[in-house]
Image 1 (spheres, rainbow, N blue to C red):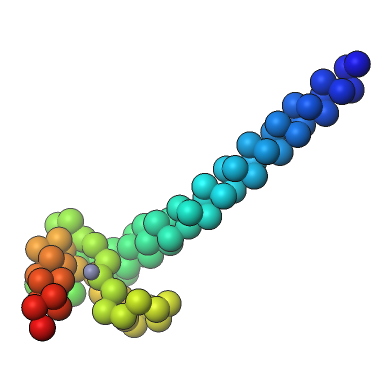
Image 2: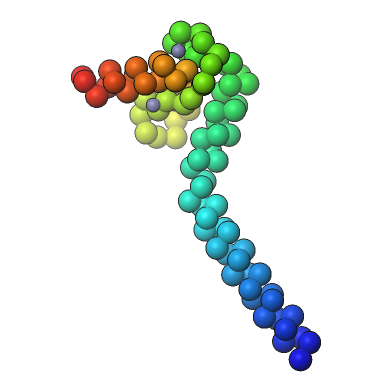
Length: 88
Ligand SMILES: [Zn+2]
Ligand SMILES: [Zn+2]
């Protein structure tokens, strides 16, 4: 019954892999976020509003996949952008 045991563990492994994949799918956006943020930090390296290099985050002007609608902002400017948008 060695092969059976092997199969069971194979299925178990497959299920784990599948679950892992689903989890990754849910995380995909955050991965994309961090990947993009790192990329923009490497390319731009500072807040596109005030030039600060602290706590850089991505801000979406529009929620689409257009990179032109994403800004690299420091946390202060980012929060400022959201406050501005909420009040206008
Ligand atoms: Zn800033
Ligand atoms: Zn934002």
